[in-house]
Length: 203
Image 1 (spheres, rainbow, N blue to C red):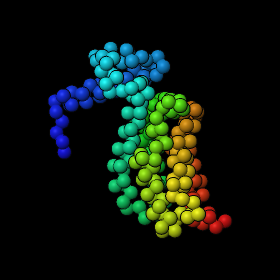
Image 2: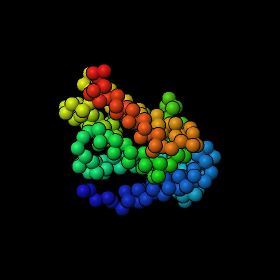
Image 3: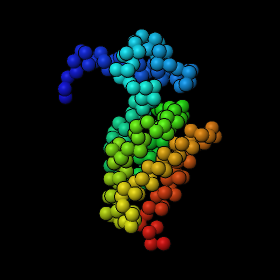
Image 4: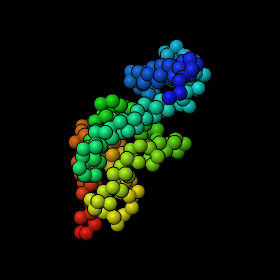
């Protein structure tokens, strides 16, 4: 492992300070009522320091959201004893929904989705290079090999349906106050899984 220099450690500390300060201000005052000047002042840094680490306020939320990619990778060990690919996908997404609800919260998700609709924003949410997409695709490919999942559609297409299921559930969670994320997401996933099973292709 490469040892970080004092300069790099200081930069990481500054980035973390800006990130945590911004999230705290967004929580207290609302995303739209917080400026980059506010973040710099409250964090004891500068506007230049902010732009050294982030291109915009939105990137603050993306940085926080990226924590879930580490969660996916670390959660794989929890799936080692699952006997079917279906069970792995269900357990992964159930844990994903809990993580998003408890660790990120609705305000973060709302802001990410609102800003992701802007044409000039990066396509982070739908990137097929992210761990979530790659892990689900691996499970679906394995399920196609064992006969669990239908083979009349590509693994890419089936993976898109599963991942859209969770994105759609998160979008609705952001819209409605009386929406139970885990319950609705689990039900939606059950319906999608039934549709991608091998026996569905024969009906």
